[in-house]
Length: 252
Image 1 (cartoon, rainbow, N blue to C red):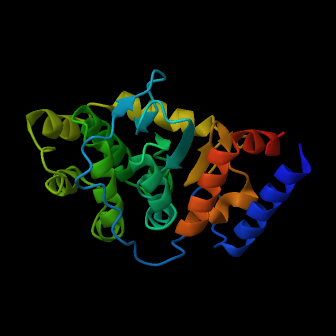
Image 2 (cartoon, helix red, strand yellow):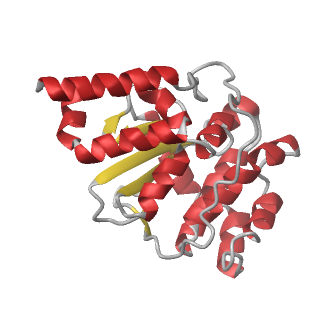
Image 3 (cartoon, helix red, strand yellow):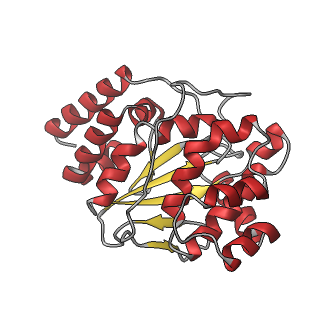
């Protein structure tokens, strides 16, 4: 690696050291929220971003399929640290996705049901998959994240609550969506997505949520904090886009 590249990535790591150190769900016994109440993370009004289910059957993609930089997010809908991320660094990812500079991919986990009891994560993942059918995944995902804390305090992601929240997304409610949510139509997707999450990284139970990969490379621990600060996440993504070879070389 050239010395200039080394300096740039060392500088990025230094920036990361200034960011919030956050343990994700699944990386400790009971990780909790670190930054307080979430600010709105809306995709409302963004109707022209392509959404699709990838060929692997578990990855949901949002954004221009020709975007050269790909950010993959690993999220459990009941994880409070995911909500922190969605209200901070995720804003930078969304902004670059809107500009068609980045494509965002989601692998949705549901392990929090085992730890917390109930089936709210599974029901939320099923509902998110149903929203994809109507090209409303991104907007519905934002609504669930905006309401997660309140929902968890009042009983979790039940069928009734998922349908109620879907009212906030124009055009989402309808017979097909409501039936898919009520009957857990995409249970197989929920199971396969959790399995895909568990098979990511070196830990047999999965990398924790939220976790991040850029261009198929899991973001190392020293960079995690950048994703909980909007400006730092933007700086990292810009660096990756302008120096993709450096990002690949950094990983060896």
